[in-house]
Length: 570
Image (tube, rainbow, N blue to C red; front, side, top):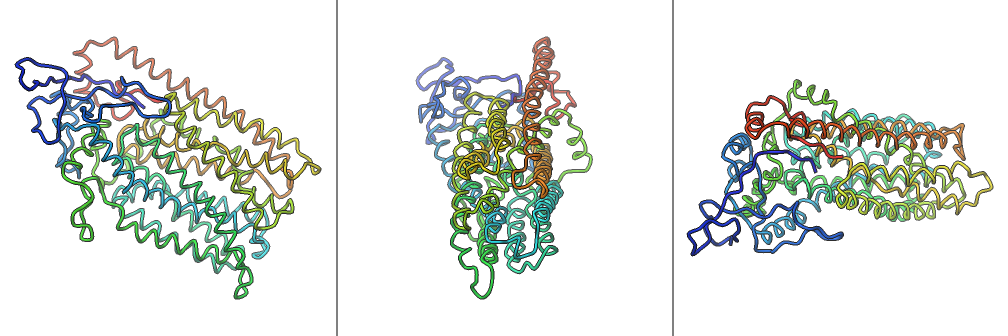
């Protein structure tokens, strides 16, 4: 995680029955808070296990040291009165690990699982075009491979264009309002694909789906950041993207059944696929209006009069997140961004390497992945076989996603965990390039399955961009910009395999190999870039006296990751 260097005071606590001060103590939720309460041991000093989080005594203090322990920095970082959770801020609040673990489990159950379900529905509607391809979708509508590529390009382009506007709307009206609205809107478009009639309607629905779905992912990530700390969020994002893979696996089974409806009422099976899955998303979208509270302290509503959390739980939720990242109180959850602020964030050159990675890191894997089911059909497999044979790649990818996300946290390196994807892909692409028309279909299937089942490191890079952004407003825009670059990469990938290059796509695979090698060097550059900035800041910061450091914190006009005491993750 990123580091903010500050002057921190560790207050003492007077133990019961003693006149002397002690730097150790315990706190019971039923006892009154001591006048100068103790702090828990910093998590960074605890020994971690490979598989488990650091062990803590359940009834010991969990409250972590922060800028709120120094009277001077407390006033610098104190949440403004307009912040929606300010009434629960308490710099002397203390709680135990037992309480914290119980609350995090409760958040996982009430907030995280529903976020995964919403993402499940998005990917169900986003990826069912691949299953439709196995049911003569292109032939029924009179489309070519190039038409299909154009549809994918328009989808990603519209998705890209909608990213930032969607984030700005979400920041103004609140993600709890905007995200369900998005889901309802795109579900109508998705189920309307039942009535597709040709090239024009196909391209139109691709555009509309892109516009409606754009911004959904960074909106949800920003929403989740209200409830989780920086160390908790990356692992949650890994499971968040697991729901993406689950949608594709479950979607393949659903498609296997629904596509058998071909001929019912004279309609193709893919039409029922779009209709039924779109209707499912509509139901989840409507339910989301009731399942997404605006913030940790705003869970009460007319249909939920007691709310989800007690006052004590709200105090713990608010203060543990603020102690982890004081900048999260910088903006109200209904506060929009100014044009000046947006422009300043766009000019932040320190984020550009991560944006550059966003545009290219998945390009080498996407064409073989997109064409997997279509390629299987071209190899002679039936509709049912092609859909079922796509499942192993999803299962492999899901396992790789979890392993690589945990690896990133264990070794505390984003570059190492993400560049491994390129080393995974390069030998497989070289093998694919050597294939001929005489290559066994099963060998082809095995290699393309491994390419399509690549370890999905996107959640690591999303969390990486968020951590290096620093501040709610900056994260709002940087998350959108990063995802815009990812979608731009998808546009590039959609146009690498061309009609005149099939069925082996030799030219396209040469391009993919070249991009993979280029990516390896780009990750190396990113590592050296952030390492160089951190070393320079360390040298300057350590050359200052404690008084000069405090004077800088009190008077600096630097904002966000431009601050001299900020350290980048790499």
